[in-house]
Amino acid sequence: MSTECEGKSSWPELVGKEGKVAEETIERENPLVDAIIVDKDAEVTTDFRCDRVWVRVNTSGIVVSVPTIG
Image 1 (cartoon, rainbow, N blue to C red):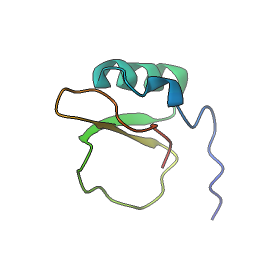
Image 2: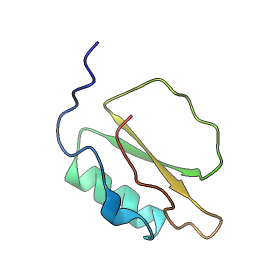
Image 3: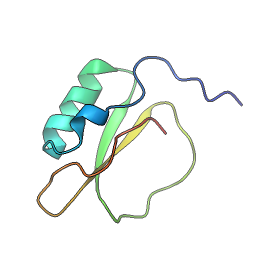
Image 4: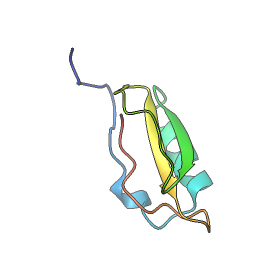
């Protein structure tokens, strides 16, 4: 199985931004992915998918880690 995904795959510039803004930015910059906002400590599925980006936010809704495809 290949892990090569099309388009932009990482958004380090979004750390510290509001989660909703990050979600919109990610989906605008790579329309092939669905950005999903989750709590920073949430357990999520670990299967790799080229069409998904987890956006981890703190209790204030601020992105706390680099959103990446997976």
